[in-house]
Image 1 (tube, rainbow, N blue to C red):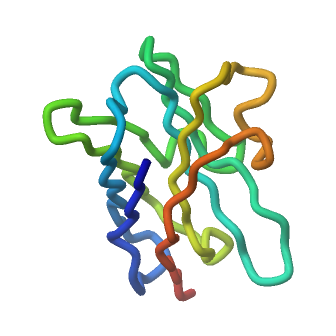
Image 2 (cartoon, one colour):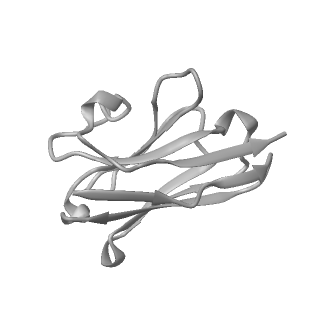
Length: 125
């Protein structure tokens, strides 16, 4: 199982970025995919999750601004981030798991077994 996140960068507040997660070694369409972030000095937090059945979850702090999606043919998962704020600054990670992920546990980082290397998003004010 390999996950490779990319697409981070420096953007001004109010701007947009699209993160990508390339998956390999497994059929990602059958498993939940998650995006997490970790700011300096803070714990890793769940940003969004897309289950294999299409159900999505979002952290309250990003609802209405971020959208998770997947391209099964390309084995890619995306996180479209709009209206970015300085508090969105963090290293963003994609993750997957082969056990049950649902609305009660998707945001718990320790629940996920496989992680990408992270991509840094910096939002300037």
